[in-house]
Length: 302
Image 1 (cartoon, one colour):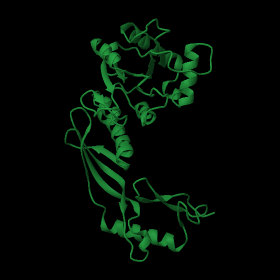
Image 2: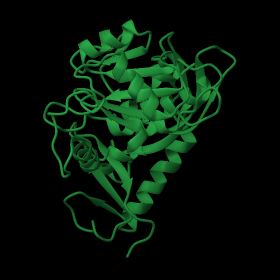
Image 3: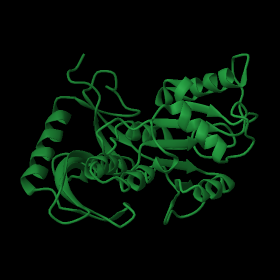
Image 4: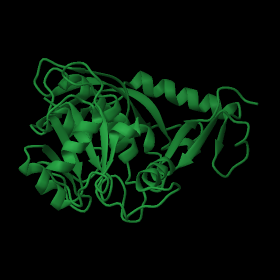
């Protein structure tokens, strides 16, 4: 039974440059929404085995680390820090070993055993050590394709951990799948629910779809959000095996086209570098691939 999560800081949540890995903060926010099989909130703990890799305000190593977490926008995930944050140096350990995990567990006050924990690390030595202690461990390997108990992108991590639960599995999976579809597929999930088929969920999303306009040729290819149905199938590890998405209904496409044309007629659509950006309710923005999107800026012109 999973009772707590432990994340290593170095080369896991933050890079050697000190920057936070992409999607790491968002994944931690998802984990904050997880429940244990008992219905409790899932404690998130932080482990820093290397006390020389960061600096910050404060007189001691712990204070400097907490200051660094504050700067990085990570502290709130591990509050209260006196229980959820552990430094190897203060625990009397220079490497990740059983003694260090026991200190993490004792400070967390989770009332659990070591084998109730899940450890996430980007350090191979730490991963090997944790696995010898029967702690379920996932390795973050950003330079490799994720498979088995390793992942290359933080959008995958909640899916893998959610798969370890029993009673809370489906609820945690829903949260993890929503995050993954939003971050990786740019889909705005409006509903998601399990089906009678094992490891399968169904729901609706707002998907970006291009429209065409005979009246305003400059609008051709602009993407707008339209409702579609999805079916998500997960594999044995909890990863998304397949994602099926229906086409938007013709009437929804037609309604979206008329809505956009009406906005243009009333001067409520601006481009990123064009006139009206400060007053229009909507903007057509362009991404790095040259795709254009209709984005609401405000609800009424000012």
